[in-house]
Length: 322
Length: 300
Image (cartoon, rainbow over all chains, first blue to last red):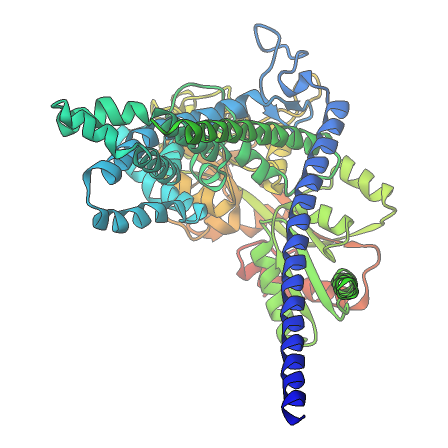
């Protein structure tokens, strides 16, 4: 009798405990689900907001004026590619800003590709695991430096160094900005190159050695070509980062909206323009919509770049077994 | 089981509802003054606020910059009580206020002079107004053309949100034959703030820039250029040997002079009005002078 009651008591306790656990689990489940839904909901809202405002932009300004102003008289072709949103005769051409963005992003990616791939090869093929465990976090730490700090560094220190070395006419220029950008793009390319190289099976290298290839021959003719997709995906991601970066270019590029291919000239990028002008612009003015248009343009560009990189990555995963 | 689920859903919804409504509760509006606007006036406003809060501990004043345009936008959408404006309001801003049925009130609080600066090694001491216009609109590109060394001119300017930008554009660049405001040369490098601009010009021997007199008065690594309105007139500089020349700014002889304003949304409430009175008092105007701006009238 006594035993029985004790037993039921224990059972009850157990039951109680399990219900508490269950409730806990259900609550966690719901909490996570709520978060996931909220996140996707907000992303949808952002999409909607961007699309709505850019639709307004087309209505207010018209698509042609986002590229050129045709009633200008100064230019030989009768078209003005200028960014003067607050002028009496406002011009909203995205062309000089796009040129500026490209003129900072391309050199940055070129510099970063060279250094990034070298670092990636070094980490994957040359050094020991132990050393890599130290080197990799150090490289990745560069990507974590607040970009405003990098921008300030380029403005205060980098500008003087670049002037000493190259003697550019303008102190703040596209080259200075791209050097600043390289600090954040190199880690991306280096780390993705390393991943791509390490996903090449060991057998491939062994086969190469067995055929009498040296280490350098193996790296340059076997492993690197095999990993080229992964590396190019890394470069595309790096390009997306470079073109979307704001603070460094805002501080180091000089922000003159000129169409040029002179890398030592001052340029104005899309991101810097949005950052500098969005704060003051009166809502729903033509200037506001123009900023939205260039924002949507930038967003689409980086979205497509990321998509391409993603597609390459997923193909890579399918194909990697030799 | 289903009961449990239902209960938990209920709890979650109640929680969510509480969170959402919780956001709506407004903080008590107890003598809190928020000021936003012209970057030129940020330091001045901060000093006023500091001194005023020392005398009136019950008031809390918060000052942020961002440019005159930002300030008036904040005033109109209700996120600031006072907008610091360092230029005349634009038509579209007045129209916006009209649309929102807001009657804005203007208080002149101080004067400011804009100085034209170059590198100390520059050979040029004096420029006429038309020379400055041609330099900044891109017609003159070499210092040689105005009598200096054979070097290209590097233009430095401010963001188009800045009151200094607008003021300089209006007073120096002026209008073209078609009645349009002349734009700055597209080669003008745009810097964030007068301090950054002063730094850039100090490091660039071919540079030229402009900004509030207060920023440059004590800097020996910059040269303040004299401005001549016409060939027959005397060249004037707002700063002589590191001392601001108050008279020519206050009597309007120096062409690059402007009034600084505080705007409020309608007739201000008492706490804001008291602050305005403090600014206009000799105490407040003494702060203006101390901060290297120009007091509305002579203070001792």
